[in-house]
Length: 312
Ligand SMILES: Cc1cc2nc3c(=O)[nH]c(=O)nc-3n(C[C@H](O)[C@H](O)[C@H](O)COP(=O)(O)OP(=O)(O)OC[C@H]3O[C@@H](n4cnc5c(N)ncnc54)[C@H](O)[C@@H]3O)c2cc1C
Image (cartoon, rainbow, N blue to C red; front, side):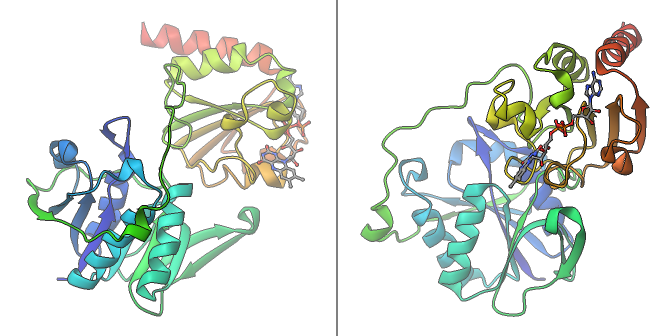
């Protein structure tokens, strides 16, 4: 059976759901080996379809740039000869993947929205206008996968564990983290992890209250178009699109957003798209599974009230 390595993603002492998504793709390829640097998280990995956990000791990776992680993965690629290494498509994940591809003389595919059992990956490129299916033709397939592109499979049994102490060179420790600050969070889920995203655009005219209330009743994250972030109405960290974040939730609700190609690039792989826009000709309706032609300040409060009533 072929071996697959997945790199465990953790946020604030919790294993991220994206790890379960990587495990789900890896399961169709072969034996799933989760590479973990924080041993205290091992019990959380029992929730996902992971066969074996490789606990990497002797280095606190939070103190350094990505180089020690890359060296560890390089050594594991050499000892385990996996057919694939799957990593979450965050900016750090893509940096690690790129360096690993160079170190192992392997091909790399980034921002894939899926990978099949035969290692053919799917990417949506050029602002979403083209779907590419490709496979790595040299070395180990190093693939980064976008979050939220698959529902994680549940546990397939208790994973075995093994200890691994990587050899980290002094040069890999030259990039040090001098300080870090957790992102200030409200009670809402993280944008790229959320299964529902409600976004507001210029149509909000700077008033995100209706968007936020609707998001809260759905347990959703709040996104924004660049028109809204550039105007200072919402933080840039919430921008969805080509120069913002890429999201692929189960449900994306676009409120007062016209559907420029740069916005679409960040959301059009969402599983279901609902649009609220007062202009029936707005291009975003081309993407919509459901559309409401109307004023968001009328539609959203009614939708919020209806969902609240249903929940009661
Ligand atoms: C290099 C580059 C990168 C870019 N990157 C991004 C990016 O990452 N993300 C991004 O979003 N954009 C990006 N843009 C900007 C993009 O081209 C658009 O300008 C932007 O997406 C428009 O935002 P919008 O849809 O909110 O505003 P508009 O295009 O002005 O649309 C507003 C919409 O709101 C509707 N509306 C108005 N009032 C209401 C109301 N009361 N109720 C309901 N509907 C209403 C209008 O009918 C209209 O359709 C980028 C542009 C460039 C050049």
